[in-house]
Amino acid sequence: MTAGKLTKKQVKILKDLEKAARRSGLRVSYGKLNFAGLKLKGGQCLFRGEKWLVLDRRQPFEDQMDIFREAMEEMDLEAVQLSGELRVALGLETTWVSPGRNET
Image 1 (cartoon, rainbow, N blue to C red):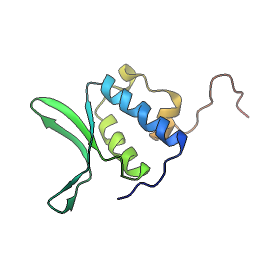
Image 2 (cartoon, rainbow, N blue to C red):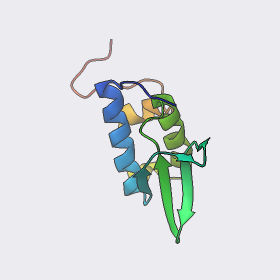
Image 3 (tube, one colour):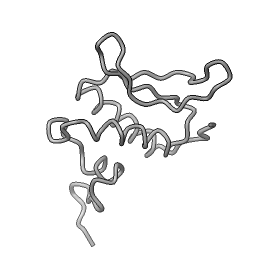
Image 4 (cartoon, one colour):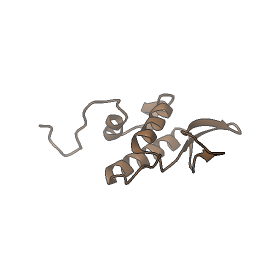
């Protein structure tokens, strides 16, 4: 379950996804997801009437991305206003060109 070192780009993507999840009304929490010897995956839950997204920073990048992808399936993505870069990272679009760069 060890994530290893994330690249700067991966860290930025995860931070931006966390912000988007919060804008959509999800509460985001990180913790060690070990309980009674079990390793839990994380994901969404409802606690005291609030929707939570629970992750373990030690999870590999792709596992964290999968949890965000699942959460984003239930969101109004237009209202959250995801950047082109995040849409590509989530697999919602296939290409993205940074503003100010010409596509070649």
